[in-house]
Amino acid sequence: MTVDLAVDRNQVPPSPTHGNPAADAWYVAPEDAGVMVFTKDGYLSLLEVYSASSEPIASWPEPRFVER
Image 1: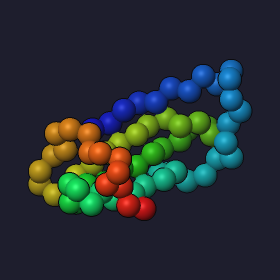
Image 2: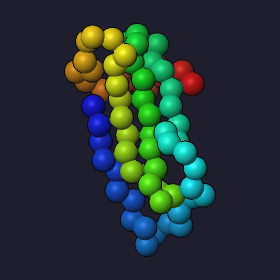
Image 3: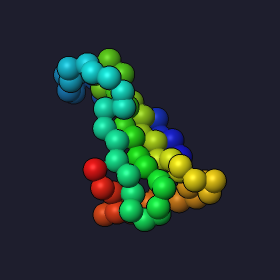
């Protein structure tokens, strides 16, 4: 599952640029799932929840199950 993010660039300055993903973590439930956040030009641009198993992610996992 992927969500494009849009930040009002007139309201906040960009963060220092760095490699992508900007942050990533694994879920403990469901197992073999993860989440990544990407940036573009110093602004959040994409949120992706993915499955590392053969089962696709069918719904957003609960944030309380994220482990970094």
